[in-house]
Image 1 (cartoon, rainbow, N blue to C red):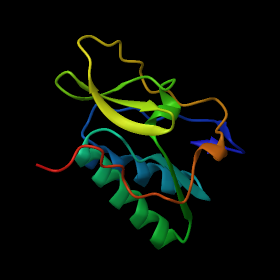
Image 2 (image 1 turned 180 degrees about the vertical axis):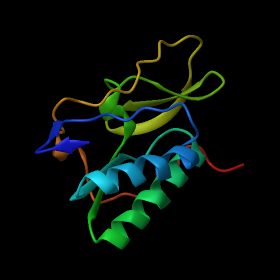
Image 3 (image 1 turned 90 degrees about the horizontal axis):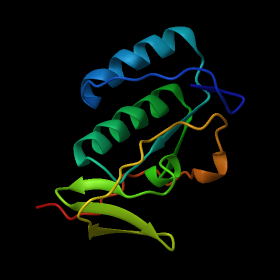
Amino acid sequence: MYENSILIKEFKSKDKTSDVLPKIFASILKTYTIENLYYTKGPGSFMSIKVSYLFLKSIAITKNIDLFASDGFAFNQNSPIKALGTLYFLKKNGKIQTQKLESEKIVPFTLPKNLDKTLFSTNCEPLYIIPAL
């Protein structure tokens, strides 16, 4: 949760995205007035990305607020993101691709103390890097 682009509250859970988003937002909507929504549109778990997008897009429509998105590399120091097995997502020269890596240190996603809104755009559809099987 950001106020005037400054991080004021962080929510963490190990639950599934589909289980935790409604709970967190029920609490948020009781306490705060939301002006905009910002999220990472991938790459990552297809199901989590889809659930997040549909949930947040629904809130944006029903509350008449703007939804903005960025890729996840903005929140892990542009480090590889685990895809599947030894396959990782990498961002090189602005392009996201997959590559096999034998052992890669995963840099955890962290929320910045100050939200840089220039990292986000209104192009909010999920990033699907790996084709569906």
